[in-house]
Length: 201
Ligand SMILES: Nc1ncnc2c1ncn2[C@@H]1O[C@H](COP(=O)(O)OP(=O)(O)OP(=O)(O)O)[C@@H](O)[C@H]1O
Ligand SMILES: O=P(O)(O)OC[C@H]1O[C@H](OP(=O)(O)OP(=O)(O)O)[C@H](O)[C@@H]1O
Image (cartoon, rainbow, N blue to C red; front, side, top):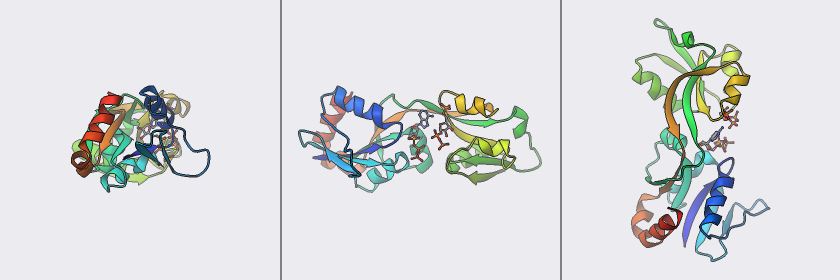
């Protein structure tokens, strides 16, 4: 049996569609039980927060996991990336009220974000001093309320930026969901993992 960590939240429905599409019969429990098995009992699934999937895989609680590239970039988890699933497309961007919000040659630019490591790396690469303000959601409010000059966040439809009077200033990278593997499981359960991989491909 292999254990697969699934992200609850917006990637869950598409993930379940992929599994059903390749004949894996799954039903998410309607209760608070956070794991379940497929009908054939070949797979055990864990329901975890999207941000935690790579951690469960890295620490061998799961053999495989489905996780956004954004989370992988942020956590730098030590896992194998097996397959780009093409779902959950979004872009990591710098956004602000106007492009001039980054023109702070002498002082530090204040950046609000959930993605602290990605933001630090981006501004370091640009040779800019950045003060990172960690938030857990509604990031777009920060520039509006004057606590940050800009944000580093995910954009999908662009609606949230538009409705809050912000626009994209720089693109950092594109993100989709990736199938990742625990590095030890990849060798010890290679046959089962390859079988799952071929099914999904
Ligand atoms: N607006 C979006 N549109 C499309 N994909 C998105 C969007 N926001 C995030 N994603 C992708 O979906 C993944 C899961 O997002 P989701 O919002 O469910 O989790 P989260 O941001 O970690 O939320 P929470 O903190 O509630 O767990 C993200 O890691 C990213 O890859
Ligand atoms: O371009 P859009 O389609 O509008 O999507 C982008 C929004 O989606 C995510 O927020 P989420 O819905 O996860 O809410 P939160 O981070 O504010 O909790 C992201 O942080 C943006 O705010």
